[in-house]
Image 1 (cartoon, rainbow, N blue to C red):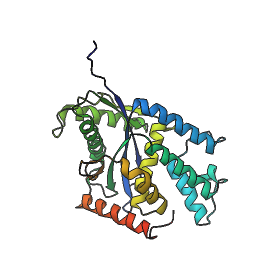
Image 2: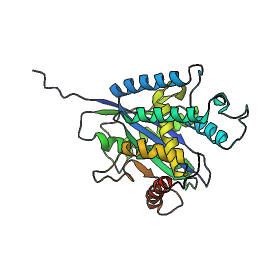
Image 3: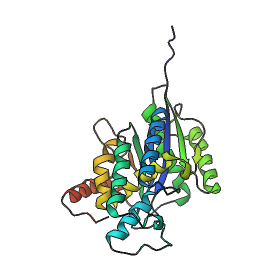
Image 4: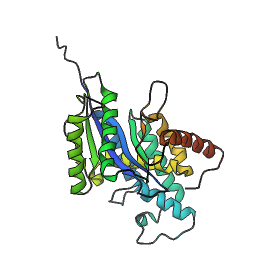
Length: 279
């Protein structure tokens, strides 16, 4: 009789959204999904992309879709220099329907969203990468603690310099984290993938972009967040997401945790009453 405990391997896809502007929220995070479910999700998303954009052979990015919708909504010309130029021939309704299909499909899977949130007012830019990575690693470990399961962290591949810093920070956290002394459920290597070839990184981009857009009070983002994203955010047993799935990160703003909690509630209320900005 085989009494071996079955274990599950989880993939934690991580990307970021936003720029270092005092007016923007900057996010870095993504979602945790079992490897077996990821294979199915990947097939579903590929089929959606083929259905909507059969002749486009480049990565479809959240920022490109939403920029195109914004420009068309405001009757602005899409110029060749715009990153969304390849989408210029698609109408607003078509692009929005694509987004709803993507998020509806994501929501069918058992994913856990975990994301850092900060403003552009960063206390220590050199330290922030390590701090955010530590936040994500801790929540992934807490999610799997007490199980035989393991998580593999997969970051969007950026510059070689950034990848080196990430890997160095990763090893340091595994060895010296004073807040979490057990990372036994985390695989001891950080992986990096080029987003063009990774459905997981692409979906992390969509998730982070949607949360960031909601914080910036855009109606399209707020609706997607309300319908599909919120219920998939990692949370405490009492339902709280702040500190569990949404992680306010060190900044010069005191009370950032309370601000984000209040703002997300207010934004959904404003959206429901027609007071959000048009995407």
